[in-house]
Image (cartoon, rainbow, N blue to C red; front, side, top):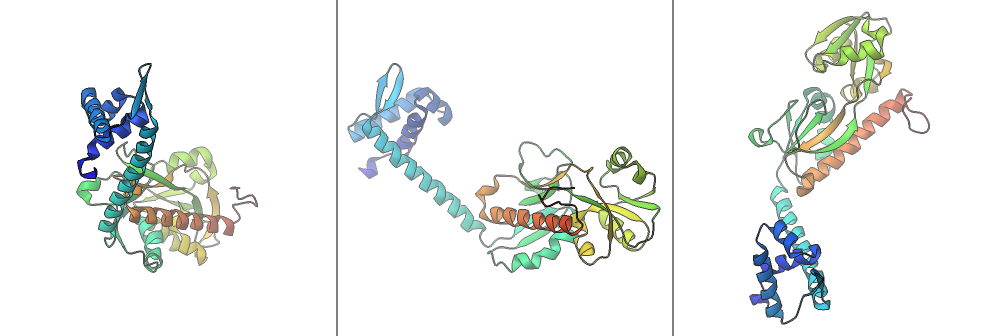
Length: 299
């Protein structure tokens, strides 16, 4: 019996059964209605049972049809798991290639790579620095960490990791008249003028990257406004004092991929690890400087 059974006919039966319509099944399978009807007829002839009852132009599964549908659901689910497993085996020992913004890479992600590797997950990370729009295929990238400050398009799969959080910091107790701003976030000036006019009155010095602002601030050239993720080390070692926790940046960090992350177990593992680590960093710093109340809300 099994050698005579066509997997294609089972697939056609499955779609007709779950849709209750030959027309809809044909549309989903991109074939003609007659092709679907012919496959159902061949299957019924082979099994020598009726799989559907036709009542008022509707298709109702017979008892035998319900048994076969249950079998099909199990078989197709097992096939899905098998295909996913094969794909995961293909990726098992391959490194994930991840693109991340330069300062986040230098100041937050790279210091954690040793801990990630110590988990012995069967794959490693190859890190590329970059920001803004990307081309997964031509750049040979598996995942990208980006903020939602640009439109990446519907063809990109995205998962929100965490909201941005910003500090205004200084390297010493003396009042600084200079404000160091990164040109990578051009909206900062408008935000400051609207939300924090007293800060916008400071003499502004613009630098190309956040890591330049951080180094200039450490050297005593002025205060700077920077993501908490970028100065975790400096705050942990009290190299900076926090002047303000700023609420004006509504952006968030996302993990981007060219296909569903669920298709690759490495990507799922990295996504879950990334969410946990970034949440821990944010929670620790906000608690340390008293910007979270007892109900875990920002203050």
